[in-house]
Image (cartoon, rainbow, N blue to C red; front, side, top):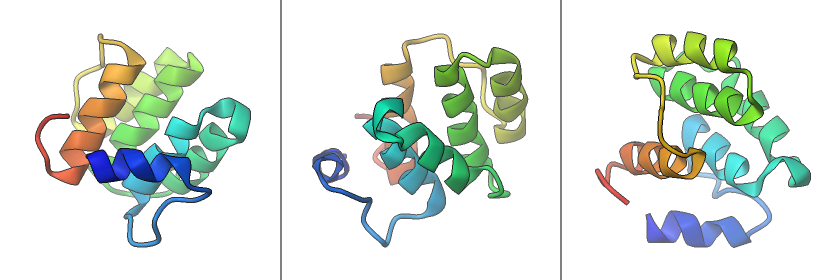
Length: 101
């Protein structure tokens, strides 16, 4: 997790990251730096549950809760009730296989 967070200071995610992690990396950059759009492009056509979870997170951050709910169901994840920051940490931990931040 520390290495992943440290990579956020770079200009692009590491090339070995899979699509859901790359999208999460871009999401951390924020909408003002084009991160949301780039993240959404990456996961919108990915068929995996992990990509659907990141997709749900993105729509939650955007404020489109109906669309987010659809993607949480596709991901097999409960609708997040905690802060967006906490959810980002939880998703990153799960995708990195570290269990917790």
